[in-house]
Image 1 (cartoon, rainbow, N blue to C red):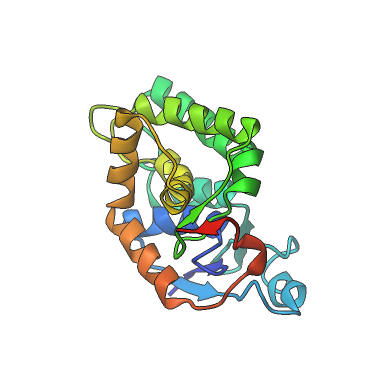
Image 2: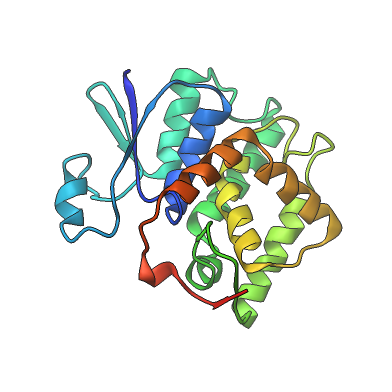
Amino acid sequence: MNLKLIIGNPNYSSWSLRPWFLLKAFNIHFASIKVSLAQENLHSALVKYSPSAKVPVLLDRETAIWDSLAICEYINEIHLDGKGWPRLPKDRAMARVLTCEMHSGFFALRSELPMNIRARRQVSISPALATEIARVDEIWSAHHVSGWLFETFSITDCFFAPVAFRFKTYGIELSEKANAYMKKLLEHPAATAWQKEAAEDHEILDVDEVGEVV
């Protein structure tokens, strides 16, 4: 198998989920190699795959690509013939805008709601987090009649999958339209498969175990 995706603990590694979701959703054959993020020699374990010493990393023969968005762009170009983005130019542009907004922002959401799929927790919502939740709700509420953010499933949906898992963990309340999108995303076979992987991984990262158990 030529494609190998280096990922972190599936329960916690939101960055790993994005390209994994894309590969699974489009039935692209790949080997998933999990690296424990709790090990003491983590840098040494990861630097052999990429100079960033972070996950995820896609290996395609002699080519190594790190950064989740760069990986998804590579998959789209080499293995999907462009089908990873919407068909219409205006939709492709907006899909990239929303994907980059997710990729480079939402810092309160990342820090206050770390991905922890196995858990059910309650946290206090800061004003910054409330603003970001409202922005996600706005994006999700405008989804296409197809049920996805655009006419067909795309990379943008993959980038919001970790957010859907976060909102489920912490019981975040959403509008009816946004909740419908989240439900569809979490019912995708790739989401179900990742959740199974998370349930079977029993390693605990204390830094991501936040909030009160509910």
